[in-house]
Image 1 (cartoon, rainbow, N blue to C red):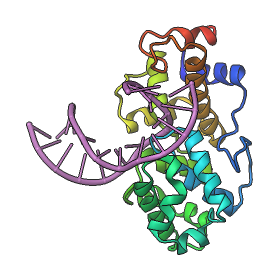
Image 2: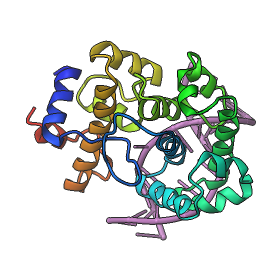
Image 3: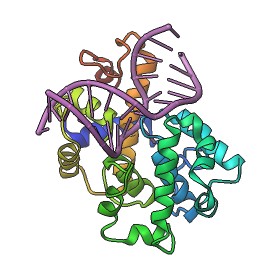
Length: 227
DNA sequence: GGCCAGGTGTAAA
DNA sequence: TTTACACATGGC
């Protein structure tokens, strides 16, 4: 069982996931508009340590208040932005991070130009509130650039399949994955989403799985994929 | 009521 | 370098 085999099994079983959700719908788009890229970036910040349904509520709140755009958020005060995103949790912190993002965006003509910056990953990582997962999510799903996203699910799932240690460093796991699957944006996007799909599926189907998604003794994931 | 969710920054050992 | 903790809402 190597990474490519796991990817193919997941794709066969769960079908393409079409991340990132745009306007609440899961659909893969090849040509994203500036507005859609912006929404994905905001979603990447909002989803920090929070489940997606809470993020969707905040995105809806922003949309309902006609505030899901660079121009509006750029003019909003942090204290006026926070109430619009409460349901995502950590709203004060995230309001600050979102304002940091729009301030940073002023350095560019638009988001597409920002993603053309060869140093964009390091630039974003230098901003407060922007860790590796948030930045790579923006680069992969909004920028459509080949940066593999590592999250807690990725570590846990790959560890259960014996492909890495549970406590592996972000950079080390990213390097391992990138070395072992084709360097294609589509595959990076799908593989990451499929890993999350497996974790959630197992958790829902087998709630007796010690309440921990793919806990150490979980054999359900492997049985679902007939491995 | 308790646990967890597609993390990050900071401080102290 | 590792560990602990603050940040906070919503679903089950």
